[in-house]
Image (cartoon, rainbow, N blue to C red; front, side, top):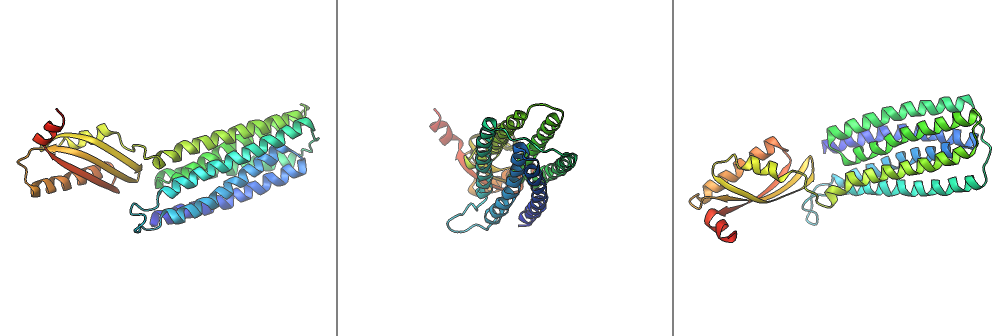
Length: 293
């Protein structure tokens, strides 16, 4: 539960920063009548809304195990990440529609030096947000924090593109470049959604979290073990579920095999991850040879 509190604290801090940045951009976009700045502002607003969704997701993800959920609720964290990705796609599609409308009917922009200055300030704030959130996500092994930081990092490049667009228009380039930038913004948002999908889908699909060869190498350091097979792993880096079969000599007693199992579990946890649920099936050597002839 201590981990959940730390993740919540990070999300609250990032939420406040994202709302501040979004407000700056939306106001500037409205005053300058720029679709690219406004789109960038609403993208930042989705950063804030994703933080709220993240807080809700963390609340449910770290609820204790119960009869209906004996493995806990941790996959809710990954589902939350997928929901954030869907939100981004919706924002991108809306931005594309608005950009196409502006291409048909361009609106003159009102660009001031203060607008550019405030956008640069928002970029600096976003760099701090993304770096902080990503670092915390790695330290806490949090899918939500890592996914959200990917989202925020794209916001930095998008904002840089918007600033370059406004400067270009101020220097005399055609207004149509604003709509073109909005389309580019939309594509970058879609790319961010795809990266989040890649990050969150693995645990939901029970993708292998540990290379089977690594497990085999560790287990075979025990002289009593003749072979290791049917190795399966799933979960996240800080909560792993591992199943495998080991082949032992038939002369090993039940008590000895139980002690051996404990020793294997302790070694795996000390090397790979302390928070592991390990299920080991012992197979006597003649039985294994019979089944594999």
